[in-house]
Length: 60
Image 1 (cartoon, helix red, strand yellow):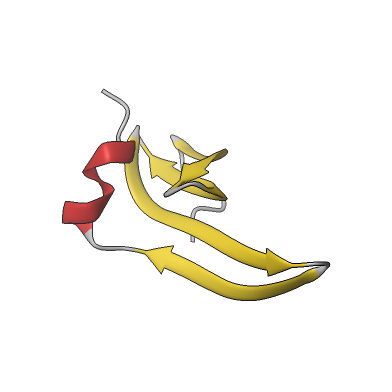
Image 2: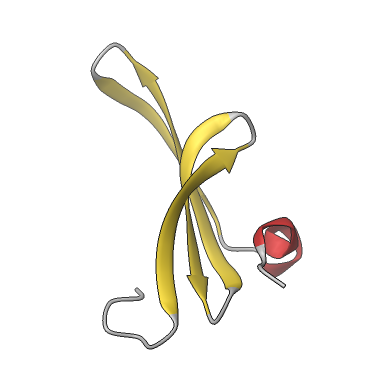
């Protein structure tokens, strides 16, 4: 999604109390991904793409 795009970065972060990744382009969040795990297994994956919900993760 962001590979090879100038100004794109992926950074770890806290996403609603879970470990997650914040994907940004030019400092603006374009997606937030978090997982829920049980033992060594991923039990749920959340991906937020709604621009209204991503405002918290924008870099100003």
